[in-house]
Amino acid sequence: MLRVETPALALEVPPAVPLALAGPSGAGKTTLLRVVAGLARPGTGHVECGETWLDTERGIDVPPERRRCGLVFQDHALFPHLSAWRNVAYAADRERALELLERFGVAHRAEARPRELSGGERQRVALARALAARPRALLLDEPLASLDPRTRAHAARELAAVLAELEIPVIAVTHDFAEAALLAGDVAVLEDGRLVQRGAPSTLAAAPASGFVADFTGAVVLTGTAFPGDLTRVELDGGGEVASIDRADGPVAVSVHPWEIALERSAPDGSALNRLDARVVSVTAIGNRTRVGLAAPQPLAAEITTASAERLGLRPEERVVAVWKAAATRLSAL
Image (tube, rainbow, N blue to C red; front, side, top):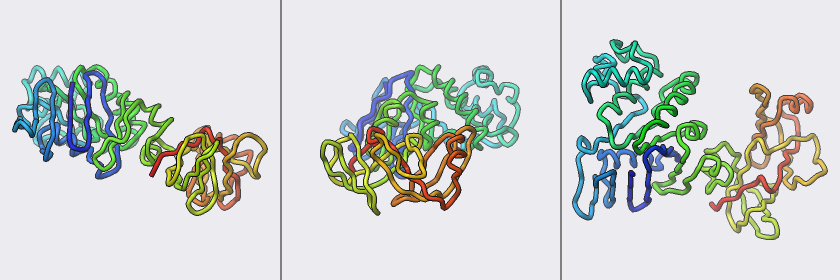
């Protein structure tokens, strides 16, 4: 078990359950990794992983080289003048280096130098090097960020398979919700150095605790002022009004996922209470789904079937009504 305590948060990461760490830029994600690895020291704090690595009250501060943390950077930080196997053997012997390269499917590239490897191959070599010294914890700082989208998707699946086999605590920093959901069954979100929500990806998507969490999970985020009642009524900043079954009072972030929003030419009859007049800004087909950008009192986006988009004959600058249910509208305090 990896335990981290700072003045702002307390975090426990068990073995074999990778934790994805997310948050806006400057939230403290990389700083947390550096504190665990021993590369940064908070004013007060405690880090423990089998043994105490840091306890500022007791004056304990084990240096990085003795903590045995595997750390993978987003740029992979491989030695450019060394072959793949020598990069891995920097932390172990040749036999273990070749064993790990074989495990990650790059043994055939053992003699290649980093500049001769693809982005996905460099990522696997960097991961092999991080595991070569049999670390007590593995820390990944956006390990897929430097890859192109096509390579990144494949590398993410490979990395998820590797992480699922590890029996040590793993923390992976990411800015991508789909990536977080793939790499880890547990996601923690930091804002201003504080833990604002932690749970399964489905939990964060269904009940975001803040506007950032809602945006991170792919939701549309609006702002307004909530007035309690049988249903909570929200007067949106800039005009318009929506309702939610969530309880709230005062300034709130209003979130709804694009696939919960339907589009009509005029306000329909039915149970959907939330209806906003909007102007079509963009129409982008993605397979059998179409993403429609909308200008309302605040920006919106709807994701509807391509068949529905064709039926409506959507074009930029046309007027539509965005419709969704109060039950699909989540509120979180600002």
